[in-house]
Image (cartoon, rainbow, N blue to C red; front, side, top):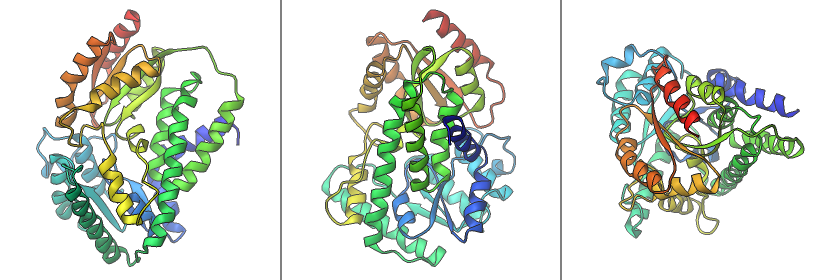
Length: 371
């Protein structure tokens, strides 16, 4: 396939995750949903199941409102909304981590709102660095394994987990290679970039890695277009079509990101030494620079500044998920650090129910003129 055909493939998958789910089901595979932000996908993969992201979708919320207050993250609301509408039917289970208050509520409400799909909790330790956190994490992973076996009939073999860890580490490496490759090609639109990352949630990782490597080869052989205005984007999600369209309209190019659904997923590899399940627990201990991970030193703030500077970004755009407390708590610190570094920063509120991005248009237009 040529580069455009590969990009079209990513866009097709990103636009129609239900179709991708149905394809796997028709092939006789069992699908397990993975809720934000971090789930032990490697375990699901090692059991011969298909891990598939469940990050909600852009829609008007109706039925889910009976389970949630209006002032809660629309990502978790839209996950339940899709579940109640039957969009996830056919899935064998959903794994929901407990890394923020909204996700804890999501897990409990899911049991009543979507009883046809079993809820499996993954309880990560917030204080994850001490030695005792390793035992806590291992207990949580073993609980997920037991629940998956009960829900799907599949069995866990730790030797197969070692192979799945290799698959995921290879995918991490490909996605990290992708960021500078896309940055070198301004002709790749923000919408196309988003589709490459978003499609990873709905494909087996070995399939997605192969496509990404093919895209990288095509980009390496292509001549880049004229430069755009480079920016770094941070937030939980940055896939709203209204937002990516505006970034393209005003000539912005995302050259780096600290987005939970995008590059944050691929920063940390699973260690290569030790027993596979323990290695997976150690991976979580090593993770950092994320709003939903306990970080008294707020290393994420300096990470964003360094990311912007090292990528040559002229500004930072924070896609602020409405009612996301962890991201809101970080914003004043990020703003102060960007000011100290001489980096313009704008905060654009995003919501799964938004249809009008005129406020974002004004902010992006003003930023573009200032730069």
